Length: 279
Length: 317
Image 1 (cartoon, each protein chain N blue to C red):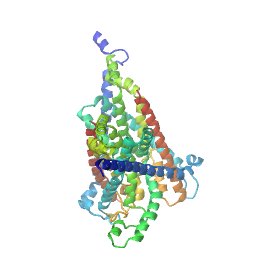
Image 2: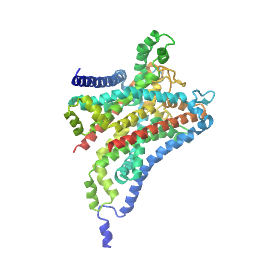
Image 3: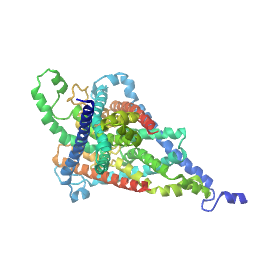
Image 4: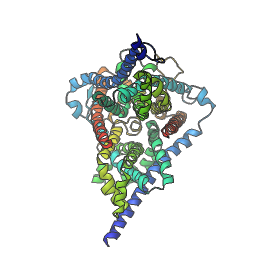
């Protein structure tokens, strides 16, 4: 075999291997999505949204879990948006280039990928153990800890993309720095800030681990944040590991609902982000 | 006072200097809150785990006895399970993720490349509990029937194959947990690898092609050396994800506390142990031992993630 032929052969094998890898990866993921659709779609009926979780063997829905998830994600996002946008603004506008800014950015990057179950343990020590009880507040705060780093990162990225001329123009008119940031920079970046919120929301809406020992879960409908609160992920976890067929069916419906929610929020976030980046 | 008139133009509120200070302070304290949060995690886990560390000392890390009834806690089993599943999943996911990203960047037709890349990125966002359920209801039964049983039937007892592959044939074991983890971190790693490969300047690549290199040679000798540090960073990020992943693993690892003896033996990870036992911990020492486990996990992942971020930051400059 000549050298050229050998190189061509190597390259051929490499191309085939890469294509096969892509095929394997895509088919694994398609299989998961297919299972999710085929097992979950049939179970969606009117009762899912109007009835609470049933006892094994009787009909019911997931209303208590859906409402609990929405409430706790709402609380988490409210905290995450305030803290995240302010911190992201500081990183982009005030802390850029400073040593402290580097440290904060680094820690934020670590927090983004920190295991979510550890956040759950931390919030348990912070809010559950001292007050002797699992609560929706604790669940919401745990989710806030997970969403904030994502909001920070996205906010910083978006604000750094705003043209410097915008800031200079504002300053030249005599506005203070804070005024420029609030009225000009935030305004021109508002779609980006919305994306930041959506990405954070997508991240926390499927989180299970941090809720297991903060909000605990609740088999009844409850919108009182100081009580244990149901959520879709914890209910799915409980139902999927149960021995009852109808509970397992509900678990698949819940998983499908979460997946649809996460996918659509992510897609909306991406579409918005692309529109802002377009010159 | 004409000078003050000039200094506070119309539009900006009169004492805006105070507003500036307040706003700046609010932003800075929000940023500091991140530091406080991370410090809070470390400190609370350490304090919560202190009773267990004090009671069991070094044997907490080396002993394999985890017994809530006799109140003896040794975490070697879950720690080993965490490390083994994470490295195994990385071993499976890394070649696949590299293949996918190279395919997307180099070989795939442009019209297909964007949709596949977006699909891969979206899949990286699917919650882990979905992967876990698929593992429990689809992968585990299939694996038990089509892999474990045939192997168990055909090997001679006592041979090395039997030692490596022995285990209850129910599909819930170290290996299937690693498979699920691999499927989970695969889209994530592929997406970041792709971004990394796209940072290689086209001129560098084109120059190599101009010298007559084949695509394989361009990837091996030009692209990969160019982004090597960043690649290690991505690998560490994937490892960090696999180490701390909870739900996907909890469903399928079998939840046995001992040290896993074979590839198909059931085991546990730190995260799965905490998820399973924490809400129902029977005593203060049990709770403390679980929090101490969390502290160990934090230390491991923090080191891995810190290395990853430092390498990736260098790669970006």
